[in-house]
Amino acid sequence: MAKTMMLDVVDSEKQIFSGEVEYLVAPAFEGEIGIYPNHIALISKLKPGILRLQIPNQAYQLIYAISGGFVEINDNHTTVLADIVERTEELDEARLIEQKNQALKKIQAAENSNTDFTKAQAALEIAIAQLKAMEYIRNNKNKV
Amino acid sequence: MSAAKEIRSKIKSVQNTQKITRAMQMVATSKMRKTQERMRAARPYAENIRRVMANLAGINNYAKNNSPYLRSCSNPKSVGIIVITSDKGLCGGLNANVLKLFYENVKKFKNSKVSVEVCPLGQKGLNASLRVGLDVTSSAVSLGDVPQMEKLIGPISNFLTKFHNQQLDAVYVVYSHFVNTMKQQPKFEQLLPLSKKDLQQDKVHFNDYEYEPSALEVLDQIISRYVESVVFQCLADNMASEQAARMVAMKSATDNAGLAINELRLVYNKSRQASITKELAEIVAGSAAV
Image 1 (cartoon, rainbow over the protein chains, first blue to last red):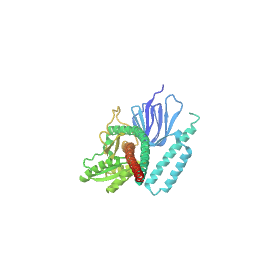
Image 2: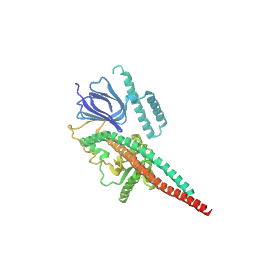
Image 3: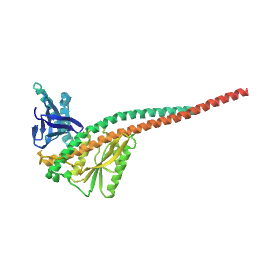
């Protein structure tokens, strides 16, 4: 059996995942990182993007869209402190595209106001991350 | 006869009030369960982020000594207070108790010449702060029944930036803690600077973490997330308290309405009997006269 490590994925409202995984891939601050068991102790900021988990003895991966946060690795125990997490099964492409377009519009409208701009930008990043997650699933449907 | 009619309509109106309070009681009961669940669901995040923050601060002295969030201030000049109350009333003494504790502390700060800024979360706290003329620098109202992080981030970040820029020396939060259904305890707690309990670290078996991007930057952001999550927890706690307090208040209102109805009914029956007796007496007197 392959080596495994403990993983907790939490967001501010609930616990998303807790259990053993073979590896995970997270959208770290300076690029995507893969984390296997016995990884060096690390704390990294996360960008909006896709979080992939490989559960032992399963052919498929669990895929979540996250909107930023942190990952901490400490003694073979990984914790993902995400801001907002969504299971990809819960995502709806039409709604996401709509959100993305709205965020784009808001960005154009809010060029003068600083807070509105940041808000709209964050919304856009999240929508793009979730769309990426959907696309990833579509492209890998044959493999998983 | 008119007295009896008046009493009857009075009974009717109390009954209608009782129906409303009973409905509110049942709504609060079902909401209370959900709010308690939400309060529990938010705990893993708060616990994990506290642990990561404590480990980082414990292990990396450079970040610990340079983080503006970890500076200590023995003699505060200005403080910020986050006041968490409900949006709606009809929940017994819940908000009154929180506000009483809040006023006491504001008075204490004012007496020692400390300036106070307030950030009310919830309509009742906002109204009260404005009424007594406190300096409200940010607020959030219409929070609904589900605590939502996005509504809190703005008002909290206002205090966080001010603490970061040394415009505030301490930040406190006051809210109702849910002890059990019958008991809600108003609490006044310090958020910033972080207490020793917040920074209690686990045993670690390594020298230092790797950081992306840098230790200080990561620590600062983790601390601000931590503060947000603590306020979020307090809000969830307050919402559970609100529903519990409302349930109890509405239950006693329903009971009291029942008592009032019983008493009114007694008066009504007495007056009805009195009028029947009077009519009988009149008839008997009339027939005797004939």
